Length: 146
Image (cartoon, rainbow, N blue to C red):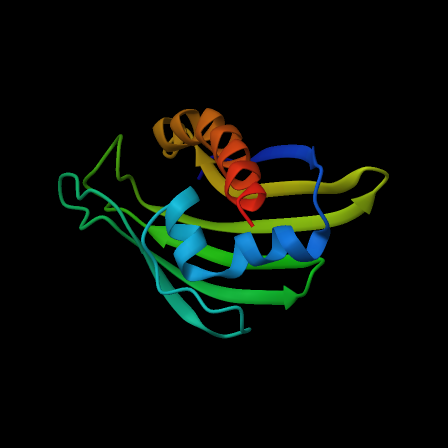
């Protein structure tokens, strides 16, 4: 077993925590900044993200809400991939945590995607690291729309 690594991205957005929380927890908004899903903001809710299948992976990310403390913290599991996919679609068993902290001029939004086991998850880690930064930009854009 390799070392576990995390992707951390953060940004101050010029919106209230409540407004950003809506963007993070409303299924149709999540679809706009990430993927189609059946998310609901309730601890224990199991939901899926859907993306392009690759190799033996069906393109489904299986998740469960682990913590939901509006509008401060949201945490969910992120599992998917296939053992036979060494690169895109490799097996992941990770946790995503969103933390919202009010600051002067808006809200500090922090996302930690933890549990990447290297070297096995290297491809996913390297691809998702810049991807999550782009997601924060998309969250800012969707939040600005109302």
